[in-house]
Figure 1 (spheres, rainbow, N blue to C red):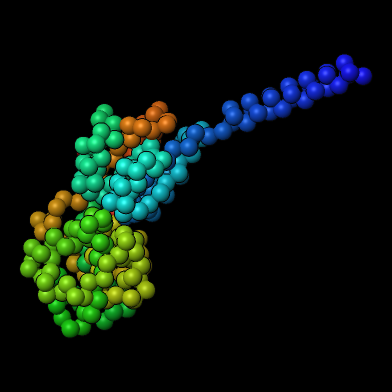
Figure 2: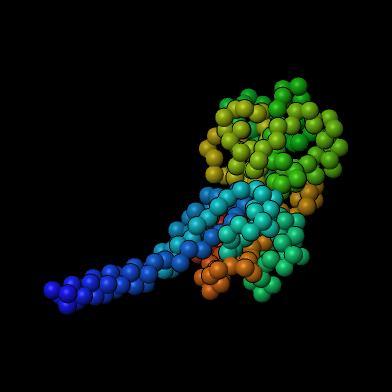
Length: 258
C-alpha cells in the first residue's frame, strides 16, 4: 500500500509539473507601453496590428499626460516603452539615463487646433476672437504637465492674448479631457491636437494654429533602460517605425517624421 501511494504521488507531481511547464511556455510576454493621451485612438489600433503579427507578445498600454507618465517612470512604475507628446518630458528621462540611448527617436509630429462644439453658433476664425464676450469658457491642458496645454499657452502669450482671457481658462488633466469638455458643451472652445479633433464627430476645427507660434509638436519614443523584456520592447519600438504603423498614425491625423 505504501509503495502504491508513493507511486500515485509521483504520478500527480509529474502530471501537474508538465501542466505547469506547458502553461509557462504558452504565456505571453507582457510589454508595458506608456503613451501620451493624444495617442489613445491611434495606439489602440497599432497595438492590435502588432499583436496580430507577434502572437507571443501582449502589449499593455497606459495613457495619460506626458508629464504624468514621466513622473510615473521616475518613481519606478512598470514601463518598457515610453512615447511622449513633447521633447521636454522625454529629455528629462534621457538626462537621468532612463531611456536606452540606442533605441530612441522622434517618430511623429502634430498640429494644434482651436476647436468648438459643432452646435455652438459662433465662428472663431483666429485665436484673437477668443476675447469675444460670446466665449465664456476656454479649455486647455494644464501647461505644467500637458504638452498641448503648454503649446496653447505659448500661442496665446505670443499673440499677447493670455492676460486678456486667462480668467476664462478651464484646465484639464490631459488633452482627451479637453476634447470631452468641448464635446459635452462644458466649455465654448478649446485647444487640442488636430489628430484629436479628427477622431470626434462632435467638434469643429475653427483654426489650425501656425507652427511658429509655439514649440514644435513632436512625439519621441524610446525603450526604457530598466525594461524587464528588452527584446520584446525593442520589437515593439521598431514596429512603431515601420510602414504599417505609420500608415495607421497617418489615418488618425499624425504626421510621420522620417
